[in-house]
Length: 375
Length: 84
Image (cartoon, rainbow over the protein chains, first blue to last red):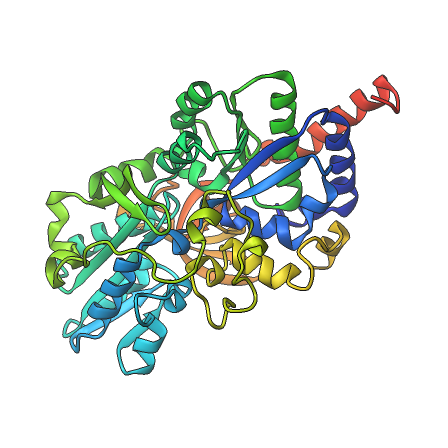
């Protein structure tokens, strides 16, 4: 597939790994922000190709993982109403709430549907005027334009039976929270390529200079990630701390202005609680007052007060890169994708799910990058 | 949710700006995609799509950069010798 296959070339990956090994003179710790990047790293065994002194830690960029438990509880409550058709990305269905999950609610008769796009939920609302269609709007800056578009289309269509349960989060405030934490060990970042495709990367420039960390906007294929790591290591070794763009085929410095305008029209920046992390100021998106009519929390009552995780799940430490998934005592035993204690074990972007799927038998054993070409 | 593979636009239906849409082929699988945020996109372009909305047009010229950089560091490595 064009723009994909060539970035999975095992020989080029080997050459990149060799060059990176020669560049490294000291131990470095680099965090990849996005769960999609984590999965590529673990799936293709990229970390095993790198020198032992270069540590990759996995970041908070898994929207399913960071959605707070009170929003899952709220989603289950709203989905259980007889008049509601509750639409969600599939990943959210098995994320544990306080006592149950959306999949169990569906099994118990709630009208819960998996959709690929919030625009499909708008179409459902248009087709079924007798149903209250609610879309679970989670995600980072990547899904915000689609969710904003859904609201604009619903407005244009004059729909009064469509609303969003909004739990949107933003990347830069989470990076700052990680860097400001006393137990931080991150020295450089691979920024999430598709978040930057929407937002551009000017907002990362003050973070790079304030905290003296290199930030490399990076794509999702194996060679993208190795290229991103090479650029990051080159900066670290040279004592530079700049924002660089590895993923220029998809990301422009100013981002996608139309998508940003759409986000600004519909959403406003709000404080947001992150599951396992706590509240981070100005780290989320909520609906603008002008679009309050499309707010499911307004229509069906607000989400419950914040509550702490009752389980032994260490998601907070996993999501801040302090702990690796296999270092959690429940990993693979009391916590599995079938019976997850926390969201990182559920999501296709969760770090725990990646470790469980690709290296359960031995966390240090990895597949060779050559496996990439057969995928 | 942040993971997406590029798809090729095979047709575009113009109309209301919010509804500008097209068919995008992902390795042969066709999906309906909203193209409102990529007004410059034309048939044959590759786009990154998230949750049914295209957010970026891929730049063919920039796509070579990852391989160019590898050649550069290869040459640098050779110039500095095997112990570099």
